[in-house]
Structure formats: C-alpha cells, structure tokens
Image 1 (cartoon, rainbow, N blue to C red):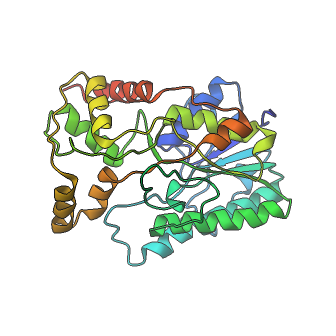
Image 2: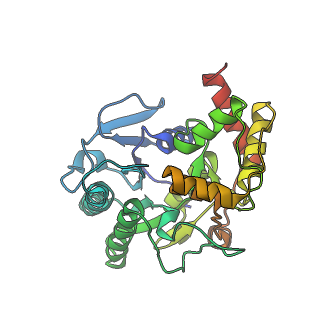
Length: 322
C-alpha cells in the first residue's frame, strides 16, 4: 500500500468529504480539501477554493503536488428537480467537471484519481436474490446516474491511455452523522414517534455507513491492485425497510411505530400523490455484490450496520435533543 504524499479531496466540505478529511488526518496523511469557496474544514486540512465545478474549472493550484485525488464533488440527485434541462445541468458538473479534473490531474502529475460514482449507474433496483456487480450492463435511470455513467466512460478511456490511474467506486445509499435528505427525514419521523405505513415491506437494500466508505476510499487511494477497477461496496448486511426503521428506533431509544400496510396499497398511494419514486425506494430491493472488494483488496467493513445506525442516531440526538 503506497501512501499518497498529498491527498486531494474534492467536495471536502460535504457530508462524506468532512468525514474523509477527518479520517485521513487521523491516519497521518497530508490532506488538501478542494472546495467551491473557502470554508472551515477539519483541523489539519489545507483548503483551496476552485469556484464552480464544470468544464471551465481551473484546477492547477488545487492539484499542485497532489499524488492522489479522491473526487467527491458532484451535483447530487434532486427530488422534483426544477431545472429547465436537468440532464444538461448534471452533465455540466458531473461529466464535464470530472473530465476537466482528470485532464488537469494529468498535467499536474497526479498519480491516481479515485472517482466516487453511484450505484444508480447499475440501475434503480434489483429483483429477488439478484445482486448488482461491476460486470452488469449499465442501466442509468435518471439524469444524475446518466451523468455519472458518462463520466465513468470518459475516465476509463483516460485510464487505458496510461496517463492516470483511475479507480471507480459505486456506493449505494450512504448514511451516518451529518446525513441529509430522505434518510434524515426518516430519522426525524422515527424520533418523533410518527406512525409509518412500512411494517409489511419485504424488500432488501444494501446501505453504506460513511465510516465504512471513507475507510474504503483510503484503501482505494493507496492499494496498487485497485487501479483500473470499478468497485461496488456496502456494509454487507442487506436490510428491509421495516427492519431498518426498527433498527433506527432501537438506536434512538424510542418505540418503533410501524403499520403493516400492504406494499401494493403504498404503490397506489404513490401514484395518486405523485410520489412514485419516493415510495419505490422504500419498497424495492437494491443489493450489491461486494465480493470483488474482499477478494482483490482484502477489505472488509470495519463497522457493522448496527454500529453505523447507532452512531447516526447518537449524532441525531445531539443536534435534535427534543
């Protein structure tokens, strides 16, 4: 395992970025947090601002002397996107921004780029006991995942040219202290004791605790065998929606209030209310095969699902004490 001289982290002020900065510093790495504007980052992290991430970004100063860059900066999936052309907006940041970064990295002499993509490149869901693998035919299903897949393809060509090592990581839903979005809303609902009509779900979804993700990203930055590969990674414990909610309730120290409403009724409700996508995520399965990670990199998640949920619940209670 080769330690980077300077580890550059784009999107260092985000949910995953802050956790990655903190862990990398703990391990004695020299870390440069690359952000859109100057901001306060964890102690020990140098901050360089580059402005908007797109095809015109000037990366030279941020990449100077960096040995490895972990690319987290992205325009993330937005529910009910109001953009006039969502795909164009996602492409501007996630595709063109990544390509520009990779080309600038070559010029700066960066050795490796670890690109954090999305499991959405594989598709929206899995059926039965099937699991997504890196060998599946990609099936990006929305503008966000399309832009991520296009970035992956461009990086693959750059990697094959031999001028830059590239590692691609496709995580599923990431949770942990500082999480936002739908997971945060679920936490709030469980904490407040709101009855949820999800007690009859029979799906299984793989999740990824942020502590496991940052540990794996550091391995991808250092391990020689990772070059040129795409990895799917998770906590290794698929969980149904109702079991997840029970686990969150246990971690929060509150009763779980789940109503056993048949899934087909929830799907009908989603169709009527225009919330089909939200209900689909709660009811469908999404499983990933992480065996390649174990086999090639000898990496196993350092935290269990239960430990991850407990850490997330502890954080939530610290910022929402009532």
